[in-house]
Length: 280
Image (tube, rainbow, N blue to C red; front, top):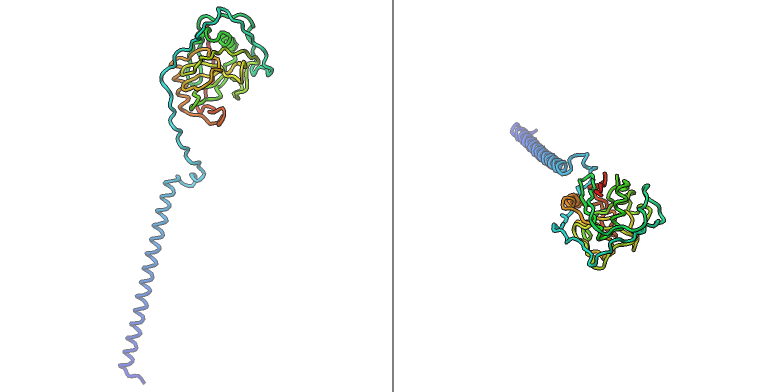
């Protein structure tokens, strides 16, 4: 039988082993606790980062922030006033013929016949973005001025919108189509009143067309660069106050609906004609 000394030694060894096991268990618990704390901290940091970047669960459905459009460069200097190198006769013959499509809005064409090529007429396009004063010049395009005045007095342009703006290359605002599609008109057409020396620039008022001698009601207002061939009838100029209104619309950009050809798009800042007043 083991002696008392042997029993004491065995009990001592057993106690030491128990203490070692307890120490090992305590060490494992500390490791687990530290690891769990690190995981929780990482999760909290990740959550804060996610909510800071996205704004929470609802932000998961948000669209990415659109990139700002590049700043539009607009010339500030007005182009020299347009002038024919050879003046027209005192009276010119104007013919307004059916275009085969019919008017986009009820209107009567001007009477055919002789019209004056002398003098200017003041007009103001009152728009949702501000007033655009114009000077219509009969010496440049008497038939065009006659048509514009007729359409304005009949209210053809009232409550219509400008459907296209170009901010690079050709910088202009195009208006005059009651349908807002770019294909509407007054139901009649008339001939071009151009000349080879014609160059376009800031402040010019010109007719849009679908080819030679297809002028109708659509026109464009040049607020900047306009590298065009001399195929578009210029019939007046835009005041500096009117150009400021157009500049503001241009800086808001467009939706690119007409890219790549003919270029530009619908203005992001809509321009609606409330009324066109003519002092004639």
